[in-house]
Length: 130
Image 1 (cartoon, rainbow, N blue to C red):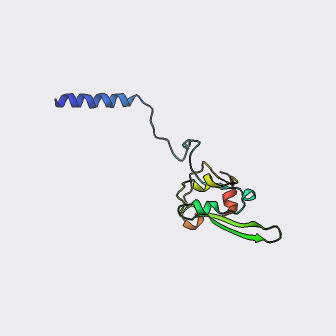
Image 2: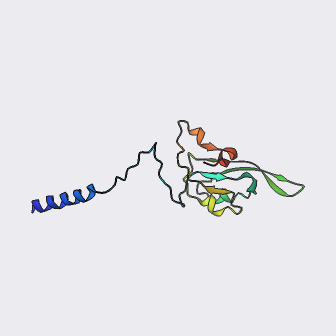
Image 3: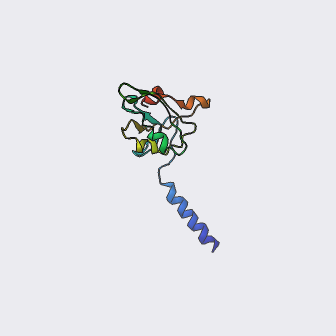
């Protein structure tokens, strides 16, 4: 009985020996992300109407939107927009509910830094494409 179990495990080991390795050499080879991958958020400043829907749907109230009311045209003018990726959970609610599609998810996943404050991206850093 024990010999049968050893023989079965040996056959499984031999069947895996003919397969290609799953491991990639990370710094030299990048993994290919799917089209639905939720990476860093990209922000287009010109499209934003400062409606703050992204702040309301965020489970942790993360995006910081600073705006000023233009009294002559009675519209909001966006002054500053920032997201702290050290706190962000990459749920994608802000991208999904944005009425003007000024937010989108990129395929960038390498966000590691030595200083936590470098993960706080303003509208200029969010506007850069990977």
